[in-house]
Amino acid sequence: MPSSSIPLTLLTGFLGSGKTTLLNRLLRAPTLAGTAVLINEVGEVGIDQLIVDRDDDEVLLLESGCVCCSMRGDLPQALNELRERFASGRLAHLDRVVVETTGLADPAPVIRTLIRDFALARHFRLDGVVATLDPQHSGWQLAQYPEARRQIAQADQIVLSKCDLAEEAEIAEALAQIAALNPSAALHRGDALPEALELLTGHAGTGWLSVEAPRPSLGGRSAPPHSTGIATHLLRLENPVVWADFAAAIDLLLEAAGAHILRLKGLVAVAGEDSPHVLHAVQNQRYPDSQLPAWPDADRASRLVFITQDLPRAALVQAFETLCGIAPLPPA
Image 1 (tube, rainbow, N blue to C red):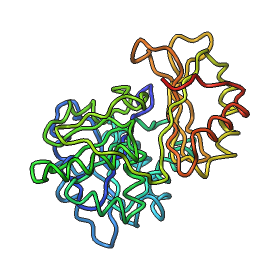
Image 2: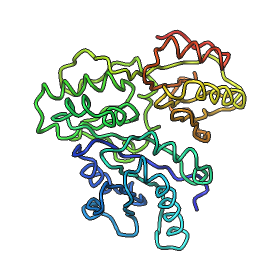
Image 3: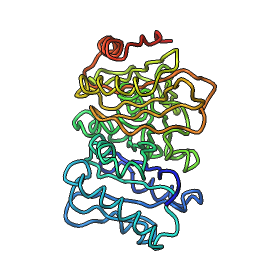
Image 4: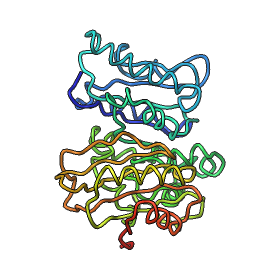
């Protein structure tokens, strides 16, 4: 196996939002030649694996149901099978894994599966969550389905698909919904995507570390955000931390407020170390820590992004200060 853990990207999005189309486009890129794909579908008969342009040994269909509920036992099994195929020579390369979820999946339990299985986490690391959104249908989907809202809220990168078919007013409404649910995500049009590997890599840019940054318009008209109970809060820390103490305090915070924390992600400056630790958590579960080889930009302050449900910023900051003993910097 490779000496470092294998990056895993979660590709999510509501029914019909263009996940499989996007996946096919990405897999044509030479940089993704060593990418294995896990596909999940609801129902007894799987179709997506038949329309993904990939060798059979690089595509596994997760057949027993939704990956976020009944499939949680099957996902580790499928990932371990990929490792076995690579070890036996059936896969020439295993450089990256993409898990395409069903359109009805909540990403949080999928991420939590990776967090809880420490044996699995030694070999695979979550590298990012990509969500697709069709602006023609985003209005009613995000209004009626909590799964759709959670998919957008927990994404690192969001692809607006089928923009060529949508009206400008529909794109503007989709942008407003995204701004309300997840203003920190990097945002792309499906007809103007970045390089494939950059899209699948959650740490390729630092957009999710700059919640206060203006939301790009993508050519649509901006609209005021609306309240959904889901909010994104950026906490910046001035000084490096002692990792063991800080991680233990974060665990206490997640235990106390995890029911309201959809996702936590961040870069943490650690005393005595030249590169940041990467922090990931879903609800009350923290992902095993990892470290980047270098800082992605000139900013050396710790940056924590909390995506919360019904947890105001003031309450989050108070809990953070109490349990971590650190006062975050005031918002910029």
